[in-house]
Image (tube, rainbow, N blue to C red; front, side, top):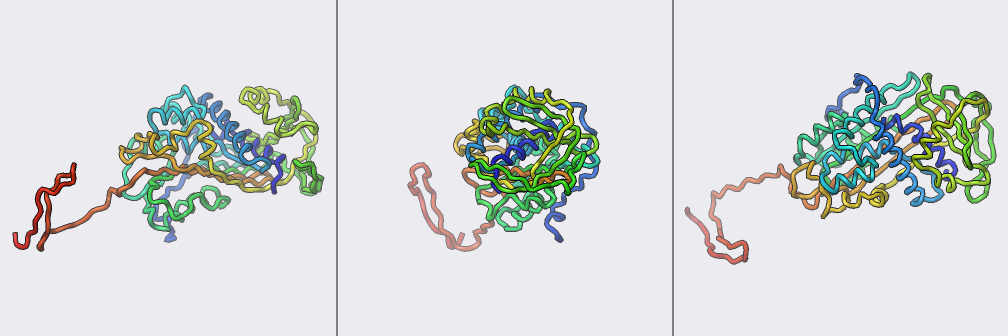
Length: 421
């Protein structure tokens, strides 16, 4: 289903949640993943700079993807993308770190502050409502035998609660192990993010997964759902199921659009905010207004009001590479094998760089509520690679030949053979 008007509905589901979302003998059993039944106490508050930065970053990413895929349904998780990149930034240094902060709109925050803010948000995310499931999981997968700086790994454990595992990337089972983790964390909605075989120069995957399942505070009655003509971007119309409901909702009318907030769960902490351009306007016109400053003003403009809402049922998946988009947002250096500086991850040489950032999402909106999932994978490569755990054994216990060579010029100074020492 490629309904451009629907893309804003999908995107705004996440945007409404940005302050919160930022805010075998099975292979997985063998890897020893721990159960996460006990959650840390929620933080009292979250650094507002992180929330504002991620909002701006989300709008920038979305706008760039709209230009890249015009007319397509688009659904992203800025929370997932920013968290995966923040984990990666813990290994960045110098100009590379500054470029990543600029792209993430987190200029002015130091690494320690960013890590603390993400850690606070993660505690607030856990169990937001008895009728809402919201889960965030992080993991780092490194090539077996290749060491990384312990402080880099420890920061990702401490602040992002990241699972850290070594795998033999030469084995096909490693791809399955990573994708099984992705499938588990997204409750089966996203089957995987890594494709095999893994490149011989790939040394690490940093992965974030977010899963959301929320029931509407007031469910739509399926008997009220009607087939209604839906106007497509090119002017054509198609019959499509639209869920209808009357009640009291937070609503406001802006210049060239109207908006309604549809809450989830008992405490209504999370909601889907739907922004509908006026019939004489368009999504393109609305996107021009979609700025962080306008967004902040809009959030204060909603007022409780009686009315009728109609929301199309929809379900789709979205997948994209974010490399080109992030480069345009100022992160070119992080993808440049010759210029990237990830010396905080491990000592160089060989040089580390980001080879790919992949993003996958899923959303299903129906009468009962919404189910959504997102996964972001940051793939790290090296310019050359010699496995640290490779060893050899050579015992000169038989006749041998030898040379004494000037390695600067290549001249052989002496050569000979030994048949009997």
